[in-house]
Image 1 (cartoon, rainbow, N blue to C red):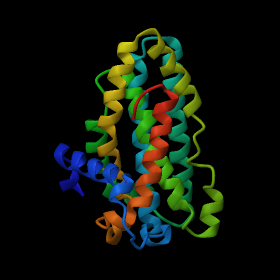
Image 2 (image 1 turned 90 degrees about the vertical axis):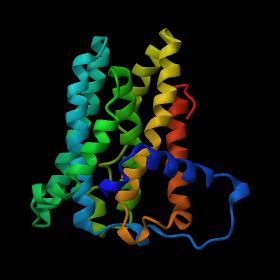
Image 3 (image 1 turned 120 degrees about the vertical axis):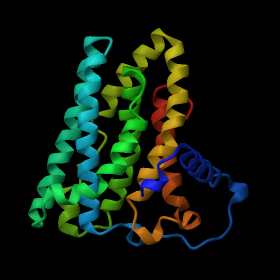
Amino acid sequence: MVSWWNRKRAAQLAAAWLASRNPRNAKPVERLQLDDVSPELDVYLGQAAYLQLSLYETMGRAGAAAPTMSGRLVTGVLATTALERHRTLVAEIERHGGQPAELMEPHREAIDRFLARTSGADWYESMLTGYVTAGILNDLFGSLLRSLPADVRQRLRTVFDAREERAVVDELAAHIEQDPQVGSRLAMWGRRLVGDTLLVARSALASHAREDQERLEPVWTELIAAHTRRMDALGLTA
């Protein structure tokens, strides 16, 4: 997984998946179902738990640089929501007799690299990172949840909801309205985030399915469509 973490590969992957949305490139192909791409339960829980812990830590650090008190409060919303998700996932790991640290450890290096590359130059970029990357990955993990055992699915049914997004949109939109240059910069940053985030999304799938780009196209199409809606909510071009 470490070998994927470079700018050229991320750009190529994003470009290929975005190109697959063009109807002119479409051709009949057997589509993978979620049951075909979901990883083992321990892998799913370990990666999701470490992602949420890392997002919590990243947003916690970002809050100190917020230009306004309201911005600091909203950054706190992102952080605490990620922590709540992390705790829920840890509880599920423990319910199955697993050790949270052991299950999270295999994902540590790649996710740390991802967060280092997407940390943002300032509070505005950090906030968009939290909004975009968490949105894409929560969408994916929420979708994969549908193929997990019924009891797990029931307990985690709301863990990946979008409860924090409205507050983020309201805060960032206010800053963009005050300074259009912030909006232009964030639009570029949002596009920059997609490739790296989709790499993490691919690593969350079962290993046998990661390279089957053509059959995975519906998964990426759904993620990109939701990302586009999130950027639209800020008045930015995805």
